[in-house]
Length: 222
Image (cartoon, rainbow, N blue to C red):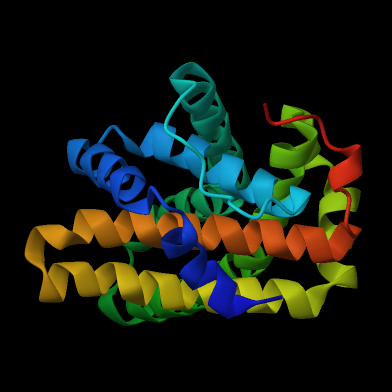
């Protein structure tokens, strides 16, 4: 994988200023995150194909919105185990609150410690697996492909180095995104969009490494 390429590819597009500006305006609206996600999925797909200019045009809005919504649903479903675990913790701790201070506090600390460790482990697993699931959906254009556990986990297990690199890109991109609010104020909308496409570029790179150069097997992007 080429981490530097994930961060530099945006500026290699001759129309990058206009494309980033549109993305920033969408981020500013709040609800624009759906087409931004769809846009990011197209970035990942183009990277897998080996497109030299993977930053798409802002067109075919219907497809971007639908694909962005489905991608959001995929991410939510993959996050459900953590959400369910949190609900179970609440149910466990509700009767504990009626116990004496000493016993109740001890049980609360034990439960919250186990919960924290479980969430941390699942979050790390999700950070590795979700990029593979999303790229699998982007390339196959099949919603169910994101939930083929054997295929998705196999991609990560057999190419762990690549997906650890994706995790590093996610961390670095998140730092870049936060710098927009610190240094530029409203510039956070620009850096947030930039960070998003950087991450999707990394998703595409890792998937391309995992499955090989498969551009000849993909449907046309035109």
